[in-house]
View 1 (cartoon, rainbow, N blue to C red):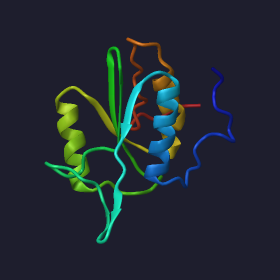
View 2 (view 1 turned 180 degrees about the vertical axis):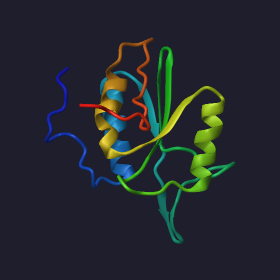
View 3 (view 1 turned 30 degrees about the horizontal axis):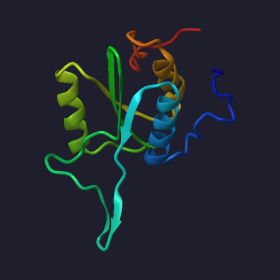
Length: 131
């Protein structure tokens, strides 16, 4: 399968739901199990029906030997405390959970293209790159 061309890469202005939809689309094409829970419109506005703690991340993708849980945000959008609490709890449980943004698309694509049973280490955002 060919890599996405620059025209197909997510725009940095994408919203979280749009990024999540693109992730799920690619994941399903590449034979991952994937889910994104979208809110439904009610008389009171948009709501996502849940029981339990609010803030669970947007996307879960899984297949043999790999589980990723991602909260999708716009490029400069802040992450609410409830979402960060879920991400921290999942990380402490050994799950690869993180916030992803449109600029992370090359890494997201690389992760999803890894052969089943293999994992890809994410670049450390705190490491400086030298040219």
